[in-house]
Length: 291
Ligand code: ADP
Ligand code: F6P
Image (cartoon, rainbow, N blue to C red; front, side):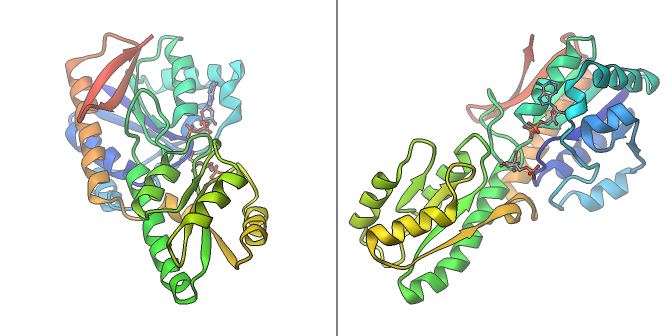
């Protein structure tokens, strides 16, 4: 069988582990690794990687076949070019690693007759209906490590600090990290400054922690507001891309391998539906057809 693979949208640790495990499990099949996601389909960009190379990358963060955000793929012309490339390579099934935006893209080409297996990958963990997306555990772990280091010095001064974490439209990282570091306040789209200040006034901690989900308020303005209202010094840190890279955690590797095993089995068993979604739910990795 000719299997195409691409990575689209935000990357996450564990994607290389997924790719290596998949290619290793399906050694007898032919792989075309498209470079830069949907852009690679449009422009016919492929990677010439063998199994030993993929193995050498499996504990690296990022994604070795590269990803992109590709506005052209949302257009009819872009999708026609992508379909031509898939035809040129005689692709029988395309494995798409991506987040919820990439899933929309996968749906639109599946509706044109391309067989697709979609694998949820997003540090935001926002690819419904899967309860887990590759990259989330490592991103949370990186945030916790970062905060621990900064808190060591915050504690020496009894300083309050706000930490901004990623999560474009979804607060999963903020909630998980907030819980792990025992944050005094988790600032999400349901929050407001008065509520935040009320919690901080009541905290017993010398160096209180606020976790802020990105894209909601300006962190510097928030720090100044809280500082004025509490009459104390407030520091802030934007964790940023630090949380998107790094060695996948043990749990991440476990998820990535399980997702790859289920994906490989689905390919071996044959595909009757156009779009198969791999999801984690109730402790298991399963497949479901999306229409
Ligand atoms: P993620 O997959 O991580 O959520 P994006 O939202 O940026 O990342 O989506 C990745 C890519 O998926 C986009 O750059 C685009 O190529 C494709 N995509 C997103 N939304 C659509 C859509 N409605 N139709 C077709 N393709 C889409
Ligand atoms: O989708 C994952 C994510 O890391 C979001 O949390 C963040 O808002 C976005 O990607 C940033 O994307 P980019 O690196 O393309 O600016």
